[in-house]
Every structure is written in structure tokens, then in C-alpha cells.
Image (tube, rainbow, N blue to C red; front, side, top):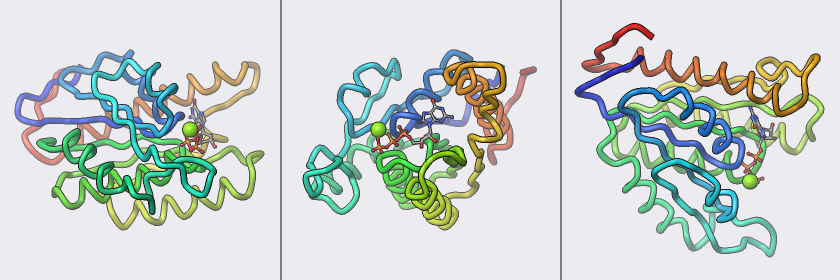
Length: 200
Ligand SMILES: Nc1nc2c(ncn2[C@@H]2O[C@H](COP(=O)(O)OP(=O)(O)OP(=O)(O)O)[C@@H](O)[C@H]2O)c(=O)[nH]1
Ligand SMILES: [Mg+2]
């Protein structure tokens, strides 16, 4: 178990995949971590068991999907993110890159964390090779943007972590999520600052 008296560590699951991964991470019951779920979809967010939920970017952009980027609610989204992650000594951002919400909002979280001077690690998945070129392009741009904004980006290609051989998609996602949870715990152990560890 990780215990840390002087650090304030917050983990944000962003977008639908980020929220699902967060649910699996929360089951590991890490000590002293604050969990935040963020999404633009109220229905998805309502199913989250995270103690802090942030509904972002409700304005509809070009009649299509809601996005917190380049829309009127950007400032409001920034304020909500500031209030959720403020006071943290370390923030971990978890998202599946390739969709609009996870990719854009992860970047917005990173910008806010940067402006608040919070040590930040992003743990993100890349789309499966069978997903569209559009999603892969969004994800690639997302990684490049994050690299300029956070202390560390851990990139986890879904093809590699979600090995579907012999199992259904949900089981393979679960297997991938446990790898992400391991990466997250490792990032927390390496947090700069007064980290005190007991055995994992
Ligand atoms: N590891 C993992 N990856 C997932 C899971 N669900 C979806 N993904 C990946 O995450 C990517 C983004 O999907 P979503 O999270 O649904 O998209 P979003 O961020 O909510 O963005 P929108 O397009 O606005 O809905 C997908 O292209 C998949 O590669 C999951 O449960 N676990
Ligand atoms: Mg979504």
C-alpha cells in the first residue's frame, strides 16, 4: 500500500475510457489518493463512483459533440478544473486518447496543472491499430501536446496492454487497466517530495 502523509495526490480519469480505467484503479484502494472523474457526457459521468465529478463543456460545438476546447465554456471548465486539482502536489491524468473529450480535456487539465505549478504525469492509451486513422491522428497530436505540458507522459498502446487473445473485449480492457494501474502506482512512488512508502 502507498501511504504518503505530506503529498496530496489526485488522479483524474478523463473522458469515457479515462472514467472506466479510473473505476478499475479505484478498486485497488490506494491510500490517501483523491479521485476525479471528468467528462462532457452527463450520463456517463453520473455512473462514476469518483468522489469528485466535473461536467465540462456543455455547449454544443458545431452541432456535433460537446467540447471544452474553443467553446464558450472553456473559462468555466478551467475554473472547475482549478478547483478540483488545486492544492495537489501531484496530479495523474488518465485518458484513452483518440476521442475528442479525453484528448482535449486531458490537455486542458495539463494546462491548468502547469499554470498551478503542479507536478503532473499523464498516463494515456493509444487507439487499437484497427481503429480509424482519424482517432490515431487525434491521439498522436494529443501525445505531442501533452509532452509540452506535463512532467512525464506514459504512453500505453491499447494493442499492447489489452491483449484480447482468448478473452472478450471487456476482459482485455480490464487486463489493460491493471497495467495502467501498475504504471500509476509506480509514478506515485517516484513522486518528487516527501514520499513515504510501505510495502505495495
Ligand atoms: N484501455 C482502455 N481503452 C479504452 C477503453 N474504452 C475506450 N478505450 C480507448 O479510448 C479511446 C477514446 O475513447 P473514449 O474514451 O470513449 O472517447 P472520449 O474521450 O470519451 O471522447 P468522445 O469522442 O468525445 O466520446 C478509444 O479510441 C479506445 O482506443 C477502456 O475501457 N480501456
Ligand atoms: Mg465520450
